[in-house]
Length: 635
Image (cartoon, rainbow, N blue to C red; front, top):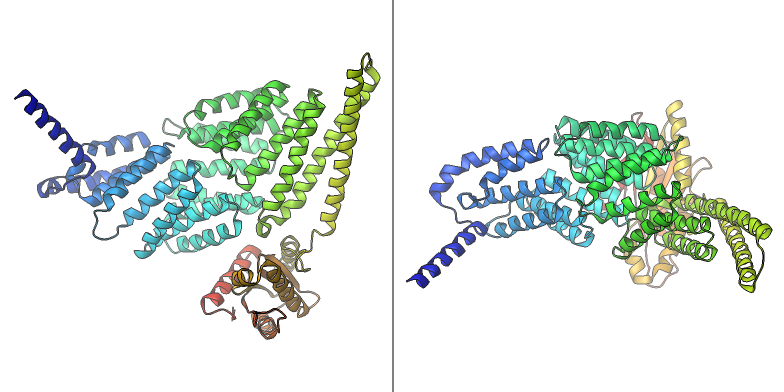
């Protein structure tokens, strides 16, 4: 009997566990709990904006009563729980929680928008764990559900999520397209949270592109939207981004002021990751300000460290070791610097997919390693590290997205030349000192001095090559090498000058955006060499139709932009039609290529635009031309 009783108890336990994992809905239980749960869920939704602990406490009342809830209520429970866990930076737990909800969702007879939200949460957890590919898959599935249900807000959130994936993988053009689509959708709603989110993400993209002014404007807008929505934690994120933009502009004291504001507003619910990046930012600002204070920087860094163990994000580990290395270098603790750099190298070795900014940071940290070896008079190691810097810089150039960050190349090259120049001077000083003081008592010392001299000469040769390269870049800085027309950097600079004149007069000014139709098919069928020739010819045909005052250039990829000063919309449309016909009627000397067409979008300065919004309007007209069948002009 005892054995049978134990068996019965075991079966009862299994049944109880099954009920928790796969709730069975009782009509009587639903009647009792339905209204109460919905009210609590609304309270939790509001509470988690300001008090994560209390919101979690309220939600967990239902942890042992899930079988009393409907499937939809179960999904809502797991959605809220996953959101709270993400705010607490518990990404692995949040991913598992979202997955629990998605497992239950399979029992639904029709799609629910909660499925889309759970997929986004799962993807966001993957993203923060550095699993970008898995994150993208979940985001795409969530977007498909949102689109099938025609839910504007969730569609916009899906575009925002995929836009973030795009900039994390260095595809800045795709990121801007996706985020601008989300921005347009958000503008059609009253959802301040959504508006704050898309502005924040656009700020991040423009900061990656070194467009500090534009980035700051988006961050400030995101802060305003989050405050209106009562999302204090999200608003603090925007404040942090604003502080970081101040550091980019070298306004370190202003950055410190903003960081102090965040610290003053923080509480027990402030996520550990935010506190880490805030104290890390404080350390950097104190290190770099005019009256640099490495000791204070180190103290703030140690404050940041206490939060590091609570995060699962590898990029924050990287940031800490980066910052620690630079602070220790300022404190002349060179052996400790090398230990920090070794930890950076270990983390990077385990995460090969780094964003453009992280790749540049890694180049800088290896450069710091070379400087440490120079300080320690370990010239052979210094030379090896500096050679690695040059190789990494070359690789960075090869991999960068020329569409969005061509203007960064010259800056990087110039920075690299400056670094080499400093090392060369340091090496020369050390060499001169060794030459005066060295007592060549044995052959080993003689060999050491010879090697030092050779390394100095090698650095001199590298510097000359870099400076020659920099000079070539300066000469060609305004021309797109493939097509021979103005490049994006030069085009935007000239267009900005023309725009300012149109504002001051005022006078008409039109922008044309031109895109080669089905260009990917041309590349795939004929090869990239033929594709390049097509682009060059389209550029040639278009440039020939320009006046002296017009600006025709390659905006990036297969897209061209034209700035037409003192030109009305009607005249711009006529010019566009001539270009369209010219390309359409051109006879191509390629086998299997009978015709190439272009789609063109046109917009004219209305008095309320800035240049970016004017280009955006022209781009929207371009997409309209493509959507209506291609080989068209819209304006």
